[in-house]
Amino acid sequence: MQTITLIYGDGIGKEVIASAKAVVEASGAQVDWEVQEAGAEAAEKYGKPIDDAVLESISRNGVALKGPTATPVGKGFRSVNVEIRKRLDLYVNLRPLRSFEGVKSLYQNIDLTIVRENTEGLYIGIEKQVDEGRAEATKVITKKASDRIVKYAFDYARDMGKKKVTAIHKANIMKLTDGLFLNCAKEIAQGYPDIAFNDKIIDAACMDLALNPYAYDVLVAPNLYGDIISDLGSALVGGLGVAPGANLGDGVAVFEAVHGSAPDIAGKDLANPTSAILSSAMMLKHLGMKEEGQRIEDAIAACFASGQMTGELGGTLGCKAFTEAIIKNMK
Image (tube, rainbow, N blue to C red; front, top):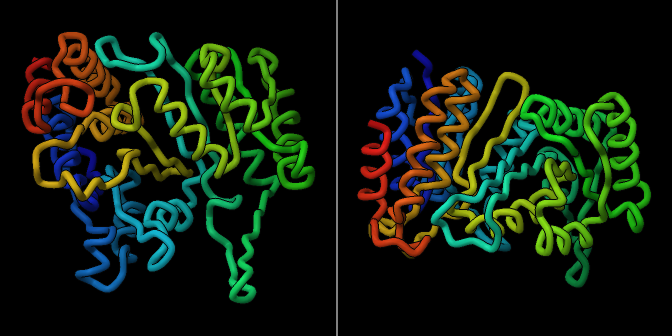
């Protein structure tokens, strides 16, 4: 029996994580749940968005399933997601992107993966207010972090039968920081002669992804660029609502819905739980429960192929009815 830390989060998090929990249990997976609170609602109740007990629970169990958490814009506390990644050294953000038959999207037969460095770069928010008219942010890129994220990307490519890894950067302008990342990628690539390697400047990569995503297989990127191309890549297959996500470290993993908390539709049975459910399937495979994880993915694909989906994707089902349809397709 595997104990999993369960974080419902904010807004529609309660609905989509409840759906994922029900589907995991219906898959036959032998799991137990340890519920913890984090996010804006936790901040209102306890005075802070995430408590040390949450991090201790994730560390002890080694795995968590997490819903979306809200972050104030331009003020207040920093992102709970960033805090968890930083405190637990979850240096890999993994976004496999797959198109589904029946889901309206820009492209069909897409199967690519974005590997994003999670612990440094501009995204972690090292900032200072110099004066009223000037604010500064510090971008830090290290060889240690660059080496391990690129190595993970190549190991993932080899394990998953992928043929190519592309490093994303802006080394033509940021010659020291992005230059270091690119040099690390080139060095690591030499140890994987069976996998093709190339590199792309971030703006050119965004254009290429929009025009011809089939040119890519596994993309590896520093934190901020990875965040940008993750959402762009999600748009190619139908949006964030069908994109799973994982944050991985050494011996610790957090799987989460990649979309926001959508407070405007919370509690109305309008939420699309696909991202959370696909993330839970990734989680089961990570835990060695590959049959159960695949059963979930196949059931979702069967729902989409038969036109069973939520309103966000053009269907007629609410969150609960869609969850029930997935469970029915697993039997």
